[in-house]
Image (tube, rainbow, N blue to C red; front, side, top):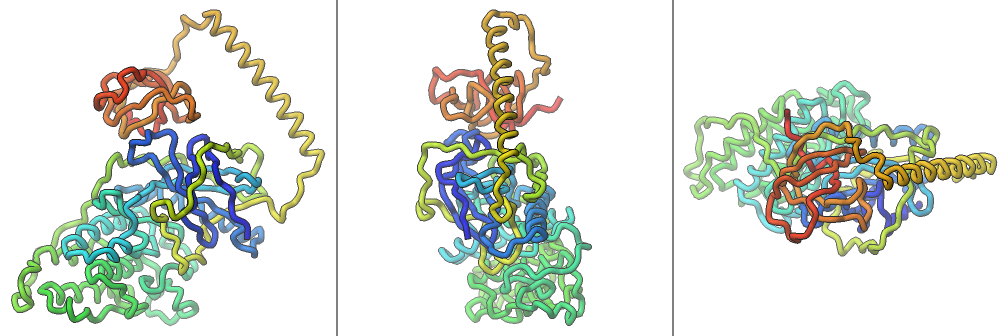
Length: 502
C-alpha cells in the first residue's frame, strides 16, 4: 500500500494542499487553499478527491480502466445534477505527487458545517428543523432523478452543511447509476439505508425480489430511512433491509407520529412498486407534517386528510454557480502521455495534521469502500527506456530555447513601444464578482503577483481573457476597499465573475 505524497504541494498552480482529511479504498481526500479566491471568501478552500490505485494490491489493466471510468462518471453525474442542494464540482486534473506517482483528482466544494449525522449527534432536531433539511434533500434528489441519475447511497453522512447550517447538499455520487437501464445491478450503499435492490447485505439474493429493477424508488427508500434518523434522532438499524413498522415509545405519543409512520412504512416497502413512485410524491406526503402542532397532545392528533405542499423547494447558498466546469477526459496508464500530466509545485506552507482540520468530506464510509472510485499509475513500476529519456531531454531543450527566443523578441518589441498602438481584438464586456477574488498582476496564481482584492458584487469591465482568467478594471467596488492604495486593474479567475448578458 502506497499513499500519495502531496505535502507542501500546489496542484494546477491553484490548490495549495493543506492537509489530509481521510482515505477510502481508492480515494484520498485533502483540504486545499484555492489561491484564485480571496482568503476572506467562503469559497477560499476546496476539497481535493485524489484517486490512488496503490491503496489496493490487486490491480490489473481491466480493473484500472473500470476505476478510471467510474471516477469520470462521478464527475459527469455531479455536473449533470448541478443544483443548489447538490455538492458542486469545481474542476479536475491529472498530476504527479512528489514521488512521481500519477493520479487523477476532482476539486469539490468545501462545506465546513459537517454532515447531518454529526449534527444529530450534537442535538435532537425539532420536527420543523428536520423537515427544513429534508425538503432541500428532496429538491436536490428530484432534480437528479429528472436528469437520469440514481444516487444509491442517500444517508445522513452524505448530506453536508454549509458553515451557517442553513443549506444542505447531497454529496458522494461515486456509486451513482447514470442510466436507469444500466445493468447488472451492483451491491452498493450502506446496509442500514440501502433498499433490497442493491443492498450489500443481500448479495446474491436479487433474483428473489418481487421487483428487482432499479428505479428512483431505490433512493426514496433510503430517503425515508434518512427521514427516520433525522426526525427520531436515532439510526433505523433495527429495520435494516426491512420496512419501518414502528416508532420509539417517546415519539409514538406525538400527534404527528401516526401519519409519519404511515408515510415511511409505505416508502420502505420491500417491493419497490409499492413505494412512492417519485421523490416529489414522497415530499407531498411528508410535508403534511408541517400542519401538525407539536404542542398538542396525542389526543388531538389529526385524523382527516390534510392539503399537501406541492414540490420541494431548493435553498441557495452564497454565490452558487449553475454553470459546471469543463468535462474531464481521464485516461488509464496505457493512454496517458507526457502532456496529460501536471507536475507538482512545492509551496512554503506546512501541511497540517488531520486533527487540526475541520471534519472530513465527502464522507468515506467503510461500508461503501468496495465501490470503485479511482485511478492509474506507472504499472508495475516499469522503467522508462534510456532512448526515450534522451529524446525527451532533447525535445525539452529545444522547446526551452524556442520559448526563450520568443520571450526575448516579445520583450524587445514591447520595450521599444512597437505595440503601443495595437489594441486587443477581445470585445469589452462587463460583469460582477460573485465573491471576494484575489486581483493579480498576471493570469496565474503565483503567490508574489497578488496586487489587491476584488470585493463581492463589484462591477467589472473585462478587458481581455486568457485560459479562464479575465483582465479586468473595477468600475464600482462592492464595498469600501480595505486598502485604499490597492490597484483597480489586474487579472482575476473567471469562475467567480458573472458576465452580464447582452
